[in-house]
Image 1 (cartoon, rainbow, N blue to C red):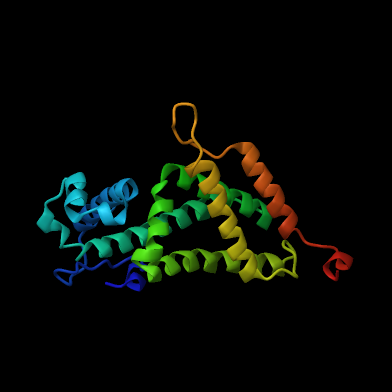
Image 2: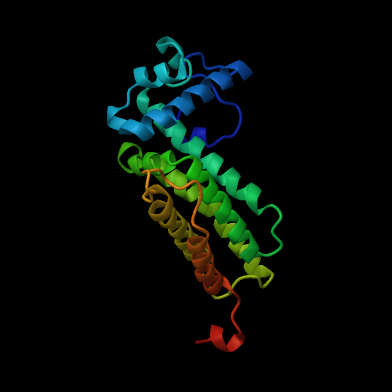
Length: 225
């Protein structure tokens, strides 16, 4: 199974049997992914092992191979699973927005909520650069595709500066969110050494002011400068 196959939301196939997974099989696969998220986050790809993952999941070693054929395959599946979940978190948060700027605020709120709850997202995705570059590329392009489409639609109704490149803006905004989360969620610690449960509202408001200024429609005279 390739990373492209893993992007499909339905119809997961067992690499051992070639048959679609049952509901029970999907639940077992999910337990393995949850265990892999913890193991890869705690120990990194090279120190992690299939044995450690199955032990954490409480699943027999032989059962692992009904769902994944190697450590790399479960790592790639985890990247795609995290990607699917973070996109869902952002999309769900944006559902009630009535303008693109409202959608940006809501979407970033969803992203930072997910990031605070799943700090493994950062370590796993960054390790993918060396473990599976193709999967890393899929992770980012999958997010940007929807982002770019949303910006184009917003430009069409005058919600966003028509002179912006939707592609460039989408990549820039995604990069901003990732680095703000890294600095103020992943690296931040309180006096007890614990990471924050949510992004500091002052940091979030400062970021959104920057985004609002960047995306807001310009008057004709401003757009020509």
